[in-house]
Amino acid sequence: MKYILACVVCVINLLILNGYSQDVILLLNGKEIPALVEKEDSIWIYYTQLTKAKYIEKSTVKEIRKTEMELLNGQVLPYVFLIDSFDRHSPYVYYRELKKPFTLRKEKVFNVRTRSVVPFKPYDDSLKITEKERVIYHQDTLDRRFELSEYEMRCWVMGRRSARKHYHSPFSTIGGTLTGFGGGMFNLFVAPLPATIFTAVNGAIRPKVGKTGKEDIPYLNEEFFIEGYRMQAGKKKLFNSLIGTVPALVGGVLINYYLIK
Image (cartoon, rainbow, N blue to C red; front, side, top):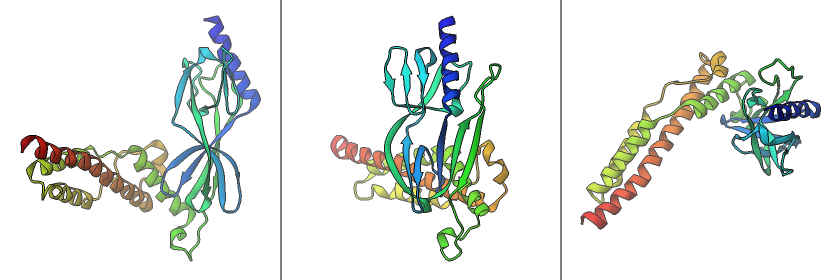
């Protein structure tokens, strides 16, 4: 136990001494990209994208560096420490793996948020994180894509982001599955009709703002937040309908053609 605690203290000390930060790129469509931004110019952002969060036992970690971890067995892995998920009392260190370098046109980006570690005190439960935002979006009233003010676009983007993270439509998937399979079983020539009708009717019903996050509270009553949320939620409804429809339709047709007949 003492050995494990010593390793944890070593990890914390090395992390603070080295200084550490990581970035989150927020696109105008509400998608977030965990990344390490390398550089940018007037047109492009150059970054290394990171994978989804994973974890490893603290007792196996010897040292954390900016883009790698060294394990007690001497193995060095290209991992990026996930600073906003660190808990001193947790037995795990959360991290993301490095992907290939990418470039992104700045006209697609709303902002870049950089999260950095601030000094850690022994009695704190977790790392203290500071976050700085750099807004990339600029209003251009001559271009319809950028005619919204910065605040209006922020509300719109946060709405789409919230729907991406929190909105779910299982009914669309179930309905697509049932109508797709039923159409395939019923008649080969009109097999797509029930699913097509369901998808059209379901898509015509605009979803309301449902579950949101704490970060969305300041924008909940804003018109552009609501419209952005409903637009992205509608896209998810359509996608879920297709996810349920296509394989069920194919399965129904195959069963009807090869097994029943």
